[in-house]
Length: 291
Image (cartoon, rainbow, N blue to C red; front, side):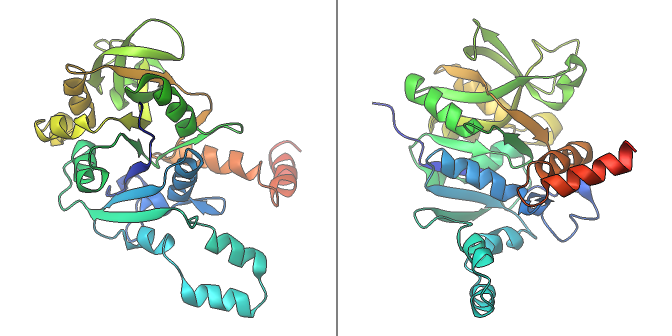
């Protein structure tokens, strides 16, 4: 019987240097897209998929993330006294009652693979999800992780969220070589940030994973790879030698909020869908850029 996905790991220890000076004192995961920080969108996606334990792997200067998901007694009291019930409901609903948050410190910046390995004491021997908040993925009907959890229930194998990228951009991603056709196919090879002339395909792994607990053993045996870090990609390559790993082409739109252009695109698109702002913002855009 396939185990359910109860836990999700959020590696949030990165420095966010692409967004300096905005991220000098505030984590990049707390950058807002309209009125929610990136990390909240990621957690909401996990909650929708049935995740009950959120595991944040943090670093220095990341207390804003734990504060965001903690109870803010003074703020809630102030909102209640002022009769701002709608805002109070929003603040109290950031973390549903059945969901718990665990924070683990990644003491050294040794890469994504090391960050995932830091979560082993909490995850244990269960399959789990990994979500990178930089990749904001929108689908109106079913979130990316929900799609992958459904696929996992059928296969019981580790699954990598993937999408096709420009062949000239393979050097920015882990790239997979797959067997078969369709949205869910077997991975036969994976390479971290290959040059375009060395890439096995242009099918890129983005910030969504479902992994079996066996990945921890292989990450512990993985040395430093690209960039002098312990790469999750290398651990997955080792895992593939012992069990099947699948690639899933999710349905939805991905915004690469790890760079400024992708972040601005997400902000505009989400503003155009916001129930309070959409009409006025659309009118402003028309006046500003069409008239």
